[in-house]
Image (cartoon, rainbow, N blue to C red; front, side, top):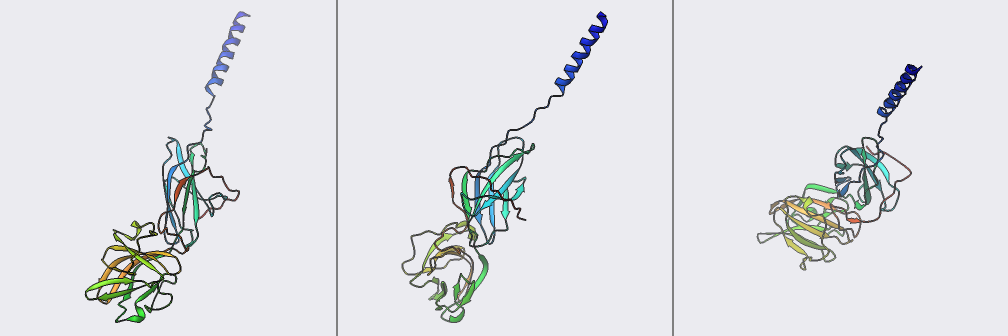
Length: 269
């Protein structure tokens, strides 16, 4: 009888020990949301970048978009990297973005807090104009229609001039222009200034310089000179379709209250 009791105790002890070893810790703690999110407007696209979450078990990030800061955000993509290009964006529409982080246990963080938005805008490269004294019908450029036309057409935003060995870009009295200096690319100028315009309504052209323009209908644009000859100028350009919006590359970033998830979820390819 004593031996049976001892065996019973041993069996119970082993059973309890086995149960203890079977206990599994379940991870229910979400990672911190990513920070430092920035949005860069392009032509029918927005390029997003952010700092990685500091959690060691982060597995990836979800990207959300809305058409207003405090609206409902829809999931458009997931990635294991720290950047994403939204190729579903449309020129002239402002998009607001938020990013969450998720870990290997599928715990998801809150959405990022920053107010990150951008407005895609059209752009072009290696466009050419002729000199207006010699070729008046192909010396002017209209950003809104991305077209070359007469220098004195009512929709012309700027035109090219060569005079006494000097190259100029000219605008009419209802527009503005200024030299932003040398840039290695068109993208270096993210925002058109709202002051400092040329009082003479023209600028001297230098290859590699970028020039800011305010059009007659209060749109903003930038032009970078790629090549100059007495009868022709070659340039790259970008144009903001939203009137009064001076941003031509990067969205605004400030800190605001936490965002909220939307009820509808769509995935953008």
